[in-house]
Figure (cartoon, rainbow, N blue to C red):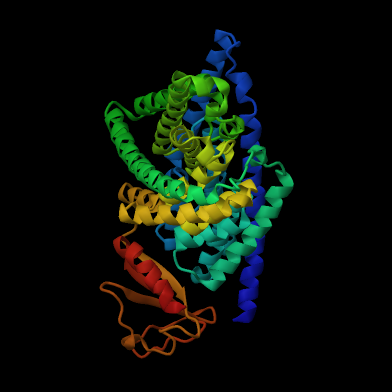
Length: 530
């Protein structure tokens, strides 16, 4: 067992290295294209130049849509698809091809300006890399799961340069069962991918965010943190519900358009997205493409309430708040539309942009009510970081990841303690409000609208020394209804299944269940082997 574990750890590091190169290259290309947007959407450009930009966006989205139509498993966020792969819900007969499609489709979707994040695409590309590595190394199905998780973690690490958070995210959001081997594989793969990401993309845009801690006012801010947690729990619930409703409405719209012919439906859908993206680009150039540039610039702007003009003019305060609120509504709505479309791309970065802007809005409202003497001046960047983390926890309901991710990806560890306080309160309030984790909602939506699911799915589990099944014969094992032991693999050989057959340490057993029950049984079955 020890040698096998060492092999899986080495394989996980290799998966991390390959995934890191692929996902960091993806991140680099998207970032380079994003730098061209201010020139492409410049108001000084001629009508012909703007028409050229419009046609370019249309062409990119059309190609991406056609690719998704040909390879439907490559669409969407990436986290639900990875979860389905780990559960055995999805099998890729041509994983290399899907990896290439996800890479190209992701670049086209993000470069066209849709409000999507690079992390979702990176997660699925990383998980596919782990899946391919498992196939090439002839890894047993139960252990291939560790490589899939390692690849997914490496994708997150490469997208955010956050190796520790990547491992925790996989445990909290996908696996939801802490297994030592999986945890170590994701940590090793994430560390390797994080180093590669840091080497290729050394600059951290979040270094520009000015963060000043409220040294003397921290005790006074505790009630503010409480209200802030409630504020973000409420908006997190609204965002999750709107995102799910948006996907449902978009699916109905596609069905309605499809009645007039598939090609006409694709043309109208892409035209709608192109027009919306182009208009957003003209008005809010730095807010499209899931970019964080606008959020960083907003943090640099000092509170308008501290200026002499704002202190003497209530109208100025109201106007500035209205502008900030309008920006939040715009990027919120555009994010919902972009993610509902099913194009390749994640939700994390746009969601954290919304959260950061909500944090700034909360800060401005707070000092308007309480005054700078109570809240403190120049804390816009501080509250933006708090908002990013609080909104992430409210929507994803992964508190540990939320505590660490923002500090790790931004490099501002000074906000960790207040994030811990607010995040804990947010998680508590969302529990009371019965907010479902966004990834679970998206996964359920994907499964409900997926016609590619087999009737039966086999879950492979490794039997460890402390396993409940170790030493038991087949007739002694009571499994849920319609769940049956399909095969036992011992020393890389399948042994006959008889009532007297005994399960031993080191075995891998395949338990076949109805696919509709896999979500309820998966984690329980995995725990039986550990």
